[in-house]
Length: 150
Image (tube, rainbow, N blue to C red):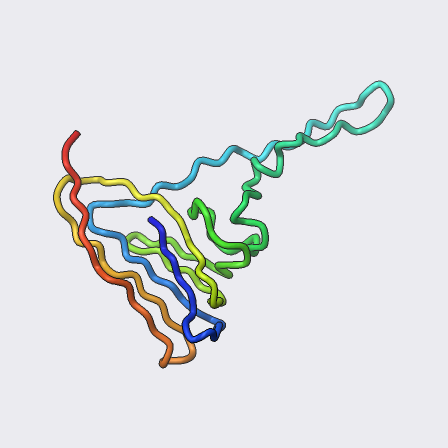
C-alpha cells in the first residue's frame, strides 16, 4: 500500500492524522528484521575491545525511512516513511493510523498487505485531518481489488 499525502494551499500544518483503512480479506505484512547483534565481549591480544559489526545499524532498523523518526514512533511496520514523519503510528486490526506534521511537498508511507481470502473487496478511502482544526480534512477515492485463487 502506498499512501501519498500533502497539505494544500502551500500551508503546512501540525498535529495531522492520516487513517488508511484496510480492505476486508487482507492483513498487514510486517517487515522481517534481524535481531540486533550485540558485539562479543572478549579480550584480544592487545587488550583492545573488538570493533562493532559494520552492519549493526542496518540490523537495528536504521534504514532510509527511519533517519529522523523518533525511536518510539511505533512505525516499525512501515516499509518506508519520510524522514521526520510520523511522530507516532498505530497499527490496528483494520487500519493504519499515523500522526505528525503535514508539509506541502508530497510524502509517501508504504506498507505491505497480503490477501487472506479470494473474492472482490472494496478498498475504503484513506482520509486525513488536522486534530485541532476541523476545517482541515481530506479524503481519497475508494476502489476495489479482486483476488483470485492461484
